[in-house]
Amino acid sequence: MWRSLFLAIVALGLSPRWASADPLVGVWEICDGAPTSAAPTLSHCHPLKGVIDPQGRELWLRAPVRAKTAREQTPSAVYIFGAASSEVWLNGVHLGANGAPGPTAAAERPGRYEAEFPIPQALWRPAGGDLIVRLSAFHVGMRFDQPVGGIGIGRYPQPSRSPQIAVTFAAAGALLAAFFGFGAVYAMRRTGSSLTLAAMAGVAALQAGVENYRSLVNYPYPFHVWRVNAIWALSAIFALLLAAFAAQRFLPRRRNVLLAAAAIAIPATYLLKGFDVKSGAALLTGVGFAGLAAAVGIREKRPGARSIFAYLVVFFVAGVAWPYWLLDLSFFVLAATLTLPLLVAEVVRLGREDRDREAALTRAASRPDRLTVTTARGVELTPLKDIVAILGADDYAELRLSGGRSLLHSARLERLETQLPPSFVRIHRSVIANLAHAERLERDGARWRLHMSEGPALPVSRSRLPALRDALDPPPVPLRAMA
Image (cartoon, rainbow, N blue to C red; front, side, top):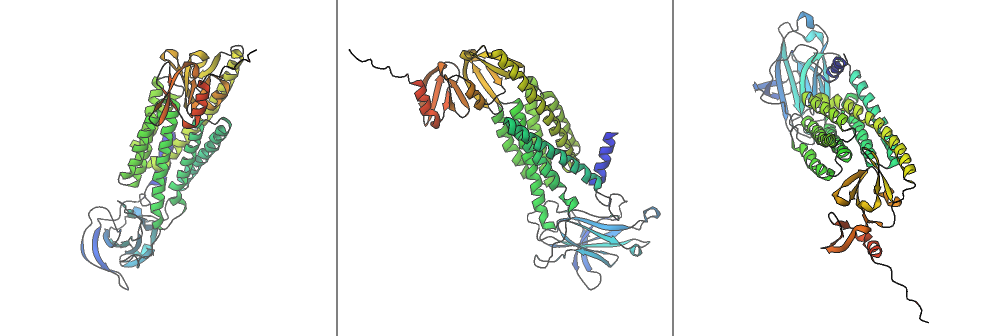
């Protein structure tokens, strides 16, 4: 039932305006034309091949119109949507103009992106007739592969877009709620994943407004190039943020590799033809990278990986099966139903971590030689002497332990730095070293590295080098006064 209702809403909101009637317009011909005081004069007509493209020229089109049947005797209009100015005649009668098409940029006055030309009932003839359309597009701003989305005759007035607008704004409202919710979580806990999710929700809400701006405002067609480029840019940003969130949550050790690949692949979708294809490809590429990170999270038994992977699969299948629905409506519904559960899960997770941390700190109060480590499996007490180094991974910290082991701790370096004894020194913005395991400090070209008793050498930043040297140098032995 819900699936049928959803598809019905989508079909009502996204179908072409003339889709409610049987096709009345025949095959288009392209002609040489000249305006007159009455109907224009056309000559040298031949069948139109390819798309209707008036970019940088004046275009005259003609098509036969068949007679209406008894079941089609309803008010009708000629509908044109696309980046062009237009003018229409039916059976030699001028129906109106959208802007003013012309043979040059100076002669043309840009019209609206969508135009409708009501047809008086008296113009319909029992034997059909001719439809003539004059187009020009000298002010597009860039070259489109399909500047005119469609020309046809359909029922007048057009079907209401209220269902689509209502669903879109409901999704946008939910996304804005998620944006403020994750923002509040970030303000309290300073977790990178919360900031990423807040940005995802905000970008998706903004795209909902940009995508459906055409339903609210019939803008001049030169504005269209800005709108479609903004849709692609927001789709690409959302995709990058989605990949970043999944990498932070499920692939912290290799997240930079995944993000580097996503940062190349997602912007590359702009090279594809057609802005619907560009935007859809950008979204699905981000979903693919996020799904890869979630799949690794399932293998490593990270909490939440299975549910997010399943949802991303639904997102991807919907995008492949119904690409236009994904862009125009499904994307906002799916984004909202993804971010809202994540907000609830994030609040629950942080509350559980707080309770576990308080209990662990109570147990560890009598064991100052251990670090309370919160992991995906629970809480562990790790001896400080076993910690070789601690590497920051945004919301997590990787503890490198003696014996080649490692442990992920759901804490940030800033908090750990205040809890550790003086033998642990911050030597880099993302590294804390246990100097009890330090062996030597060496220059490596223009950089410095600290070699430990185990594992690879650690990078040392220039700003922290003096403090590290002071910590490594033994204090001088005081001289005793001679009697």
